[in-house]
Amino acid sequence: MRKAAFESVSRGCGFGFLAIACFMMGMSDPRAIFQTGGILTLIMVLVLLAKARYALTQDYKRTEMWLMLPKDFRPPERYAQWAASTVLRDAYFTFAKYTAFTSIVMWVIALIFGVTLGSWKPNPA
Image (cartoon, rainbow, N blue to C red):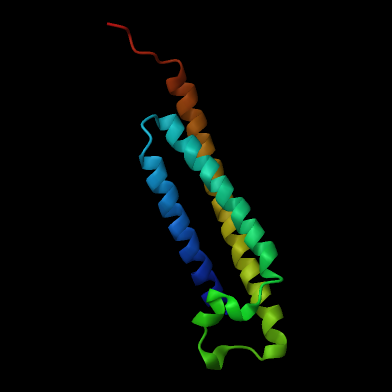
């Protein structure tokens, strides 16, 4: 179950990072690129934390993780809700932690670009 949960959440995060990267590629200023990436990954952290909270009450039969599991590897129904919600919550928290770290790195890079390029101004011709 854990492998299926992490695969399901990583797929969703991969699509989220693809969208963030595409949005970042549309910028021209290096500082703005990484500020935008930091903001969007921070939003992604908040979404992952909300999904982790919702995982406790979500019907386990309606999750992608449950559909990925072969029928012979599924736990008995009386334990399935607890097991599925616990594993999914752990996966969401793990990916929220990685995404938060990525957001911090992007903010630090934006700060470095702001400090180094902030004082640079082109000479008017």
